Image (cartoon, rainbow, N blue to C red; front, side, top):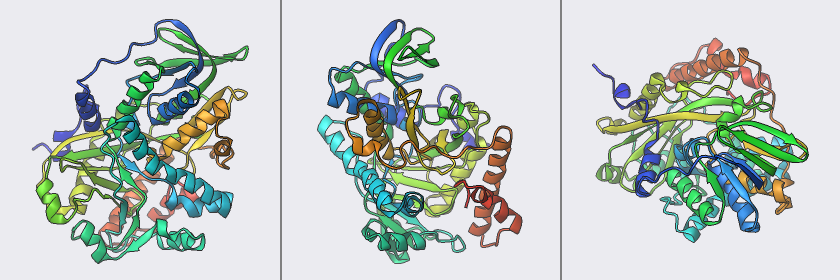
Length: 478
């Protein structure tokens, strides 16, 4: 008998997410932009046609319409994480205690407020440019769905209260949670009002359209094979051409795990999603018809949201780590990861166990040792980079793009002065220790969560392994 996970697993040639296929269909399935096939000059060359790269291009073009901007994408714009994520747009309020411990209270508040601006900023941008990205600012609810799971937000709430921003995260009782979505396994929760949902691929494709309209030259199917800086110019070689520019921007997400100079600080990790058939009447019965974003509170988080036609998109970072920076089928065809996403869906929403799942997809996300983005410059200030969003990039990538644009043109110096800009993330262990350690810790985290979910106490060995990263200064475990 074929398992539910196997029956919806993507097959070779269908790695596109449901989001991206829907967005492309809404455009009439356009042909990709031509690949680079010549030697050209530019003021700025951007590698990566996802949110980060396209936001950088947008802010540069906004400030200097005459600037010669070239964008190189190995696939199509939106073909990577920007076209397959959960569409959760929020900032870093939950990270505030960690930011305060690292940079101090005042700086942490400044960072969190700048990140929070992206929520309204993306909605305003979509309205300004006529991009129908299904934007809906309806808030985000984290749920305590398992009695023995440690509720980790009490300290966060207390810290925000001490900093005078307690309105950004509000505790909810189990009764209040049930009014948002009536699941028998949901307990109390934590409400973040400043959060919005989007159709992620529609945003990416809308950005592509706007950039083309502003004169940005986009070359798709143009993988950059080498980067050199010579005589004050950056040289980017693809299979078919060469770009010479004054500045280059690297916005390559998980592919930074295989890029020289970054591979020691970036880990690629698999993340998977499934999507249901439309069930608007069932959602209305549950009270979940307001567009709220939901997630559980486990470390191996499950996140879920609805769509305008009444589907549920449900995902989790349950895939495996990559080896040596290689991005391959591990991130798109992991049957075990898909099966776990399906099991989590049916556990958290048991009243919907009979609902048909129409599709599944997966891909890598980029994680640094502190689970926080790394943004800065190298090669004498000629090459600028941003990566390490740890699954929360739909919103913060807009801030990262503004910072990258400023590193190029100096347009918003207050952004480049934020204390995390230019701060390198911790060095990760070398291979094969990194791969072995990541697999071991992932397995321990999953088993620890499973034990707590079942009402059992995890063994001391599981708890120790799950906490090993913290002992070495990383934020990759509990």
